[in-house]
Image 1 (cartoon, one colour):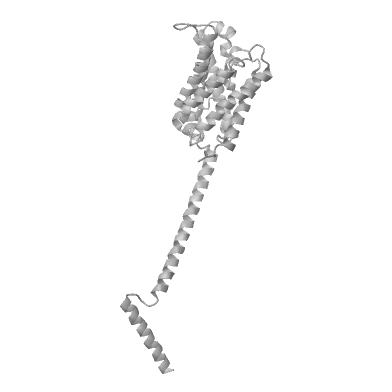
Image 2: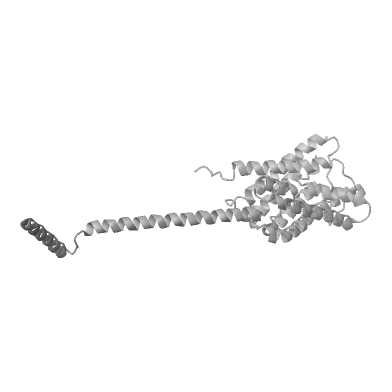
Length: 312
């Protein structure tokens, strides 16, 4: 027993001496392995905790965005603290759009010249398109520059705008359109602007039935809202082009439908002048048509194209 113990002790001393000479203590490889495993385990635990914290933070941000309304069109932030300012911006923006377009249209209807021939249909479409472009550039970052219930309802249907803010936006838009119609009446004075030109309210052209006009309004509003969704809600689209693209989309819609329906593309653009002119003929199609077209366009883009990547 003593001799065996002695041999064991001698072997241990020899191993210790060899390890000391090599600069590595006995059991160092094993200890290093354990330390590496322990460090790896700590790193994995830390990474898991960080991922959990990041996931929790993102979930809280998403919940806060859903509750507050989050980001709107053109980088606007719509929540309870900004709602009043956003509603005022919608009122003013809708006023500019409707006043700018209907004033030119009334001038064309009454054949009022400026420094040459009177305005024509081309001027009306361009006036509406240019007016929308400047409105988007001016208040897009404040309220999203909806200035159109079809845009507001389409955004809400696609989950891009809070439903509880929708009535406030639409009320502001309608008020802005009514004030714009009054301003157009004031600008041209006399009975002609209201009785003859109807303050440029939209009605189906002679020989055009309500159903045909209804379908046309759906189609042209689809074009406008589809473009709005593409350039204003998709981060991949260049922000600088948004006002031009949206303004041109409205102009195209007015070009298409002007000879058929008057080219409303916007329920309050028709309803405001109709109310002040006192003639609500065919008003239903100018409310339902644009809303249906806007909702369809918003849902189509959001459900099928919002996350689609171009082919490599």
